[in-house]
Length: 419
Ligand SMILES: [Zn+2]
Figure 1: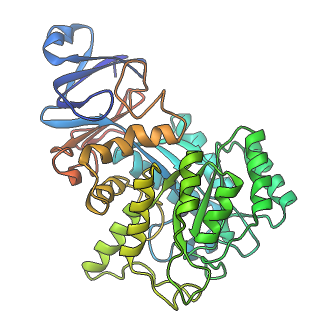
Figure 2: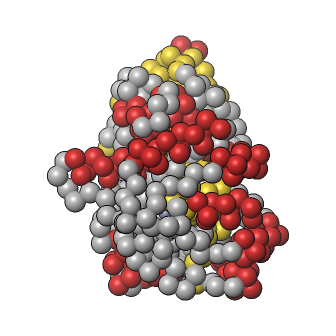
């Protein structure tokens, strides 16, 4: 394609991703946006630019997703596969998953736990232009305790010293972010989700080490004590942030004082609600549905509505949410990042624009990319996703994109894949 391009659409997101500019065009040169202009002003530009008239679509910045596992299968046997498949098999699936993700319009992804041999190689192949895929921020392997959550593709580290070594190793390999499993998880039968995996002192060592190496640190956190620990230690962001009581006979143990501290510390949360939404919908359609909570949780099953209530309280208190599908877990297919925004609207009652903003500029800010992606403005990377219909009135119109542009390169045009 020509170096200079114009992408015209009936609806183009404004700079703050809060409303439409009618009949506008995005001007792109050398992979960057150089201007957003009313289409009428550009009527004679066809001589020097290649013009893509996308017509009656909604043109947004490429979507940003803060939570992916690139080599996981998004099926119920995701754990078994991650355990038994070799690196070649996992790499092939990861490559395909990243292709699916970017062709759906998700142009930036933070992967929060995949095997090192897979994650760094796949990113290199994408960056070198050999395979299509999103811009990737990588944690590489998650850091967990022995037999802890996701141990089968994690780095096992039990002491503060081992945690420090694990963080240094990940950064040495090219990690942009550190992911720690602060509590057990549903995915791993040997890891109790209601109990912390690390003490505050161990987490503080991790935070200190990550800060020293200038990488953010985020934690998988399912239990109230786990949340307290990571908040005390000062990690940058929390994933899930559920409030399971340590006693499996009890429900949740929501703690407003800890939430206040989270607000004061500016800790973002990925509530992974899109993933829950997709699981519930599958169940309603007669599919298997989400896994039943395992032994450590199951004495008292906590209704989804109680989790939602705690998330609403957290958000009302001032905590900001990222989109993050937990791609790769059952039902969280890599082409469905938009489901996080659907859940914000349908489960939490947000406005459509607030959810669209979270899926673009908001999560870009959380990832430290606010000056680069997540908004259509001059100087930003030309990552574009065009959707049929209007997500401002019908949030589910933001689903798999019809046209995708990444760094100015057209990957998909009017539904036709070009790569
Ligand atoms: Zn995850």
